[in-house]
Length: 454
Image 1 (tube, helix red, strand yellow):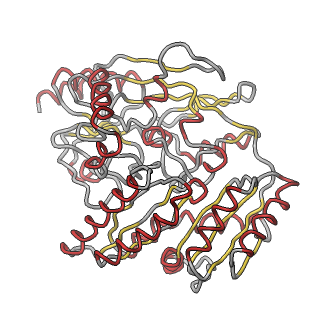
Image 2: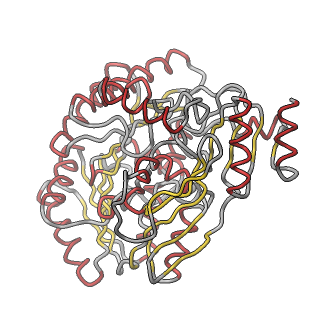
């Protein structure tokens, strides 16, 4: 503890927290079954300089450091390792600047996604990445996992909106990557390397993010199906038709039922599949949703309905965002976020159904179907070790299936500890070795979020 007193002396009072209950409350994210060690302490810096002091101390004493945001992750990426410092960036939550001329926002990592989005809209601008946890998750966490969201089918994921970063390295040095300008190709692209690195290469303390002009008025539509295959076919037809939805989401029957059981959102509990679609092209949106609706009807939708007003539209989107808390009410779960080529979507869903039957587990399968990033939730009863083992086997087979179909083990949740065993299978031996060399170049002592990703 003497070394810890040295850290306490280097930081403002209250920055280092050792209260057991508080520290224990920060040990893990929302991934069930991922291991979490016992931390040495929780540190809550407020400035880049304080983060530097933490990392210099950690380097001197060879103490592992686990960066954290809101801990809404689903892969164990923010979980404690034994004897680590938990480095919470949640208190670094300033929107430093929103510049309507350059159309950028400069923010600290603790800024909540929805807070930034609303601040941008106040000046007629738009920050598109919007993970389902956007009312809680922080920009730092979004950067760490390269988060996507409901709008990414049209606008892209987090990395597509990052121009530059300020990062504290493992030894306490600060590096600024990228630039404020819209274009710039000088040197290796370190910014994109750091986005998605899950705190294993450095601690992000500031980000310069691109903004867009605010979208025009949106129209939202729902199509209900009495079976899953025609809904999948309709989604593929929409994405191949030339219509570019700003949102295209999928809920299967069990997901709809789970949401309704969690909160009455007026969803049809008899439907076996639902597509939630949106166009944000203002006066052209009506034509877009009409075209999408016709395709759904031609492929067997039993009901197609356009939201009557903004309130109804926001309610439908809120229902889609409720899937994770809804599943938590059903039981414990392991959440995949696999993505496959569009042509293999039906193969993926058929394979997941066979896996559920083979292992006698319940699998709910919502997803960002427009970009074929599906989120199978393998649900099991808490406290049932045999059910947890079957769920883990099913989870692994879904990962294997995604790779076999030419896809990926994670589209937006990150690797963390949950998916690490399958990383080499996706990357290959040489690819994994190169990534390990990158890690060693940034963090030669291996103290930044050890045991995660590579």
